[in-house]
Length: 140
Image (cartoon, rainbow, N blue to C red):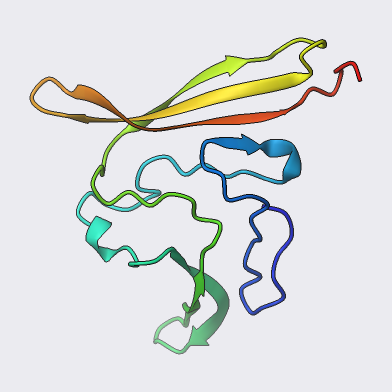
């Protein structure tokens, strides 16, 4: 992501739609591994199309003996949400890092997301992608 749309939620702008190879030199990459804070049974509450709920303001509400703040939410399209997985509610990511060298000029991180199931926690790879960027000490 790099920059934001000039709207009420300042929606992040994706710099690419590739899901297999992401050049982190083009913008900031956020990986939310797993349900991103969702409880195990909330996957059915996800939006049908990629969307996000954003807090845009807080409203002070009177409530004796002390007032409280209530969040004001807006829903935005989420073109920045590359993958939304409703089937695999639990899992973890494994990272394979190749720092590269000055000749190759690239540093790479291959990410594989696994889910687990069954009585023995059998692992199944669900998604894989590579993050890469130019090394700061690379030869031109």
